[in-house]
Image (cartoon, rainbow, N blue to C red):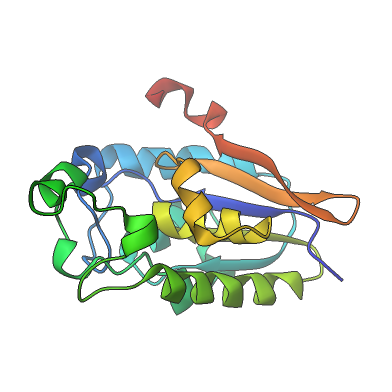
Length: 196
């Protein structure tokens, strides 16, 4: 049986998410605002009986999951780790393009990091796992990883993730229209109205 809905929750704000720095393996904590964003998720997710909760092993996702009240039932999944940016870790896109003017993460990947094909394979493993769940699922992860999952859910190449922007602490919902996988909600931020 397929999950009814899949809630994609991007972690709350960090110092690097505020500045647009690529944050892959660097294990940054949430800012105070990020912690508050996590607490506001509690109301947004209240009343949903999750059959499965998965989280990235990085503290910004774990803490967002904890603030949302779901860490006690969550399983850590290495496949939900953010894209490995390799040599581009900590840099902004404009900084990278000073050296590589045509660089695009979605087609080029990162030197000494992950390729789009590697991230796509991770996304597909996550989707295989959640499709086996009997009920609603929550995934706590990172911007580029969740965008990759959104693209793969609807059966398009990972490069389509470039068109699926996600804000910190946003909630997106994957689901079905009849048997067709669809994006039911993308980048939902109503629960964060004071942060908009």
